[in-house]
Amino acid sequence: MGGALSTKEKNELEWQKFNDSLGSQLESNPHLENITKILSLSYDDLPHYLKSCFLYFAIFPEDYSINCGRFIRLWIAEGFVKGKKGITLEQVAKEYLTELIHRSLVQLSYVDYLGKIRSCRVHDLMREIILRKAEELSFCRALGEEDSSFDGKFRLISIQKSKDNVVETTNRNSQIRSILLFDIDLGPMLFTGTSLTNFKLLKVLDFEDAPLYSVPEDLGNLFHLRYLSLRRTKVKMLPKSIGKLQNLQTLDLKHSLVDALPVEIEKLQKLHHILSYSYNYHSVGQLPSVRVLVGEVIGSMVELQKLCYVEANHGKGLIAELGKLKQLRKLGITNLMEEDGLSLCASISNMKYLEALCICARDDDILKLSYDPMEVPQALPNLLEVYLFDAYDGECLCFAELGFQKLKRLQLTDMKGLKTLKIHDGASPLLEHLEIGPSPQLEEVPSGIRFLETLRRIDFWDMSTEFTNSMLLGGQNYQIVEHVPSVFSHFSHAGGFSSEALR
Image (cartoon, rainbow, N blue to C red):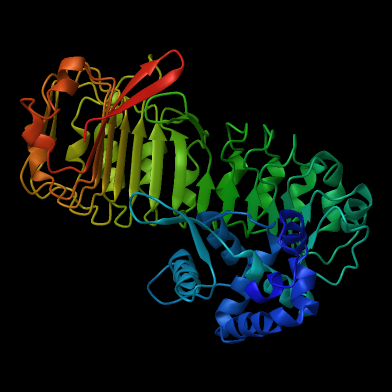
C-alpha cells in the first residue's frame, strides 16, 4: 500500500480516489500484485470445510459488521456446517468462525462482557479477494445500484440498493437458493402476490431491516426453506401456510410486529431457533417489550435451542410443555403466575444444556412468583446468565452455597418488595456482572458481594442516595465492593438515564 501511494500526489483527493478504486487497483497496479497473491494464498490454504464459510462474507455489503449468531445460523442453513458426534451444528459453526479469526482472516467487531464474540467483519482488502473468488467460482453475487441485470448463474445473491429491473429479473429466476436484502426500499415490490412460487428451491430468505409489511400466503410453497428472518420489518402476521415449511430451522422475528404464531407452527419439528422479541431501551434493564404467543403446541418442537420470549399465561399447559424441550440453550418467559413456580422448576430441571434464563412479569395484573427464583433446581450445570425482571414479590433472595457454579451474569430488576439479598460463600464463584434495582426497600448493600471474587462490574439502578453514597471511598460499605473494578449507579429521569461511576 505504501509503495502504491508513493506514486500518488500527496493530497487527500488523490488518496481518496485510490481508496475508492482499491478493487481495480488490486488487479492492475503492479505495486499491489504481491498483496493479491499473498491474500489469495491465505484463502487457498484454508481446509475445504472453511472455504465456503469464508466466501460467504462476499454476500454482505462493504464495511458491514455481521452479528455472529446470524452468521452461524446462515452457515447452517446453507449446509456449510457438517455435524460432529456429541455437539450441535451451532457449536461446530462456532469452531469454524474461531478458526477463521485465529487465521486473521476475520476481524472482531464486538466482544461482550462474557468474552463472547458478538459481531465480526472482514478487512476491505480481504473482501476484494473474496469478491473475486466468489465471482470466479460462481459462488454468490451481490447486486448493487450499478447492476442492470442478473445472469442467473449464481445461486446465492444479496440485493443492495438495487434497481427495479434487477429485482424483476431476479423474480423470474427459479434456481436461486438464497436471497438476502440490504438497505433497499423494494421489499413490497419484490415479494407480492404469488411471486414466491418462482423460488421453490430457496433455503434462505433474509429480509432483515427491509421495508416489508406482509408475507405472501404462498410462503408454504418454499418446502426447502431453512432460514426465515423478518427482523426489524413491519410484518404483523405470519400465514398459516408456514406449517408446510418442514425444513425450517430458524424463525427470526426480533423487533418485528408479529405477536402471535399460528397453531400450524407445531408442525415445524426441525426448528432450532424462535427469536421473537424487541427491547424497550428506555426502561430499566432493557426489558423485552414484545413477546410472542405460542400456545400449548411448543412441546412438539424438541430440537429447539432458543425460545425467547413467550407468554406463560397463554395456555394452561405451556409450562409443562416447556419441559419437553431438553435441547434449549436459551429460554425467555414472561407473565408467570404464582402457581407456575413449581411447574417451571420441574420443566427447566430437564434442560441440562440451558445457558441463559430470563423470567419477566411486567404487567400489573400478573401475580409475581412467591418462591425464591434462586432456588431453581441446581441441575443446570451450564447456566451462564440469569435475568429476573419484576418476577419476585418476596422480601428475601438467597444465593445458596454451591448454587449456579458457572453463572457469569445476574440481573435482578424491579423487585420492589426485596429487603434482603443474601449471598453465601461459594455461591456463583464465577459471577462477573451483577445488576440490581430498582429495589427501594433494599436498604443495605448485600454484604455477600465480598465473596464474589470474580466480579468485574456491578450496576445499581435507581437506588437511594444513601445506599449509593455508602459505597464511595470512606463510606461504611466501601469494603464490600472495593475488589470490583467497575461499580456504577444509574438514575432515571425524564430524558432517560444518568450514570455515576462509583469505582
